[in-house]
Image 1 (cartoon, rainbow, N blue to C red):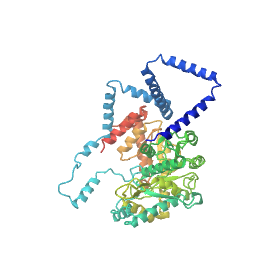
Image 2 (image 1 turned 180 degrees about the vertical axis):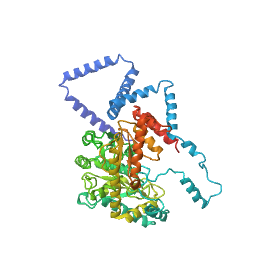
Image 3 (image 1 turned 60 degrees about the vertical axis):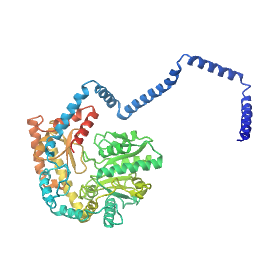
Image 4 (image 1 turned 135 degrees about the vertical axis):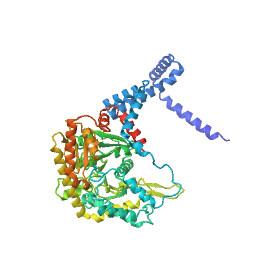
Length: 565
């Protein structure tokens, strides 16, 4: 091998190095200082063992990382929550304490389940040897008789009015049955369902500002399985959109404390830091507090119209202005309000701006299976333009099964539900929704008025829509809820403040007086005989709100869910 070129290069390098160093010959003081520094360093390091010199920097790095982690916990959770978290972590290390806490936790889970385990006895665990054929329908009817009586008794839950065997119920059941075999994943086969979905999305968008000039004229979206999936997809699309536009790789989003728990799911699934900011004294999103949390990693802020807990609309215009100014995404949760607020405004109710007419709104979620009166499992997620929506999709090019692209979390989707949603919207029309809104808004105001007339109760905030939340400074509101449950009512228990709410639907229109009478009687019963009733959940709800160790409460919920199926 000929090394002549290498040696030639080496000689040139040596000559250039000598030439470079020669310029420092006039700086003897610098070299003398450099030698002294070298000698001092050598003398100092000689005091240490060689291994110490190796491990000391590593140990310093580990300590620095630990301090950074601790400071980050304080930054994210706050001083009080962090101290409590560290305290309970150390307490659980004490021998016997963890076992005791596990036993107590098991007692609470058992209490929450009540007689659930006994109900599970006799459940099938394997296929029958011989199929039951058409007899299975009769068996299903028998099982259905064991469901709780829900007609007019449940907060939310069933939004369609009347009997489940006639009217609108019957119509959507027939529509679902007609298309039960279809799957919009197969675009070329089930073109009818593809058309239905596109029209449901377009009609929903039209209710929410797509026809207005301020929307930009590019509103688009997809149907999903429910409000949670719509929110989760909007968060995913926002994350990827902001990564593409701003290069954000450590995403954070900011939500009011009243925002739906679906955002927690999305943050967990997609590794997004979630900031939950307290609401203001009116129980609306605190725009100033949200602004203080915005930083270079913020991808999304959130508002609700209305929020699930109290039926109160957040200041959507202010949040939209904030998002537009800082060029971040802004999602509006209209899962409850999407099929009410547009019509309530037409009826003359004071409804603030909430849709794509507000600059800064980049996505909206709206449930068709609530006040849209469609079958359960139908929602819509909308985007201001296609550039954002493209980040919702997942395309796969390297699968041996072929090229694949899917718009939502599910691949296969039930075409029957899409057909049912289309049938619901087309059968009701604008006039039908307008009349339904008139009835439920009137019912909501009557219930709110009735609750305010009960001196022991107070209404939480000033509801804008069809949810009335109420608490008490006189009696234990969870004990009141237990008494109401014993009368057949199924209401939602809330916290911060302790309260319960009823989400008013068409089912409640004929039973308003009965509800208010039972509520008054329940309050008087608790007032006269305070204390938990047998089988009631008031002690658990009350205790859960007061337990400072929120990790323990989280564990309780997970254990309850794990043992419920």
